[in-house]
Amino acid sequence: MKLPPLVEGRLVQRYKRFLADVDFGGEVETTHCPNPGAMTGLKQPGMRVWCSVSPNKNRKLPKTLELVEADGIMVGINTNLPNRLVHEALKEGLIPRFRPWPVIEPESTYEKGTRFDFKLSCPDTGGHLYLEVKNVHLNRPDGPNPGASEFPDSVTARGAKHLRKLAEIAEAGGNAAMLYVIQRDDGDRFALAADIDPVYAQAFEYARNAGVMMEAWSCSVSPQRISISKPVRIELAGEE
Image (cartoon, helix red, strand yellow):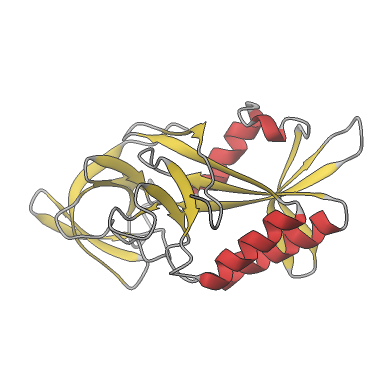
C-alpha cells in the first residue's frame, strides 16, 4: 500500500493515548496518534517519526503519526492500516490459506454485538470464513520472548472475546481465522505476550485447539509504502 507524502520529525512525547507532540525542525506540533495500545519501545523522546498530513483544512490536528524508527527498524504504528493491508493482500491472493474464499466482505456482522473484520466466501461451494485481524508492533529484546514479535501490548478484553467467538464458529464446523499483521520485519517469530495479558493467551490456545486458523505475517515498511510481505512462524505455548 502506497503511503501519502510523510513529514519527518522527532518525537517529544506521546500522551493521553491518542496524542503525540512532534518536533518538526524546531517547531513542536501536537499530532494525532492512531494507536490505543501501550506502544512499548516506540514512544521514547527523540525517536525519528514520520507523519501524514490531512488535506482537510478543518481538522483540529492536521498531522497523524504513522511510522517510528526503533533501533534502525521502521515500524508502522497506525492501527487503522492492517485491515486495509489485509484487504489488499486478499485481493492479490497473497495469503495461500485464504485463497479458497475469493469473495471479500469487510466489516461483517456475525451476530448481534459481534462483528468480524472480514467474511470471505466461495461462490462455488457456498462456504465462507470469518476472519479477524490484529495489529502487532511489539518487540521486546529484553522480554520473555526475545527476537519475537508479540501480541498484545496491553490488556484486550475485546480481543479475547473475538477469539472465543471464532472458537465457537470452528467448534460448530465453520471456518474461522485470526490474522496477526506485524508492522515491522525484524521479528524471527510471533509469540503471545502472556505476561501482559494471560487471559488473551489462554483464549488464543483455546481457539487454536478448537480449530481456528492462525496466521502471522510481517510487513515491509518504508516512508513510501507498507505491504504485507512474508509469513512468520507462530510460537506455541510450551514450545522450545
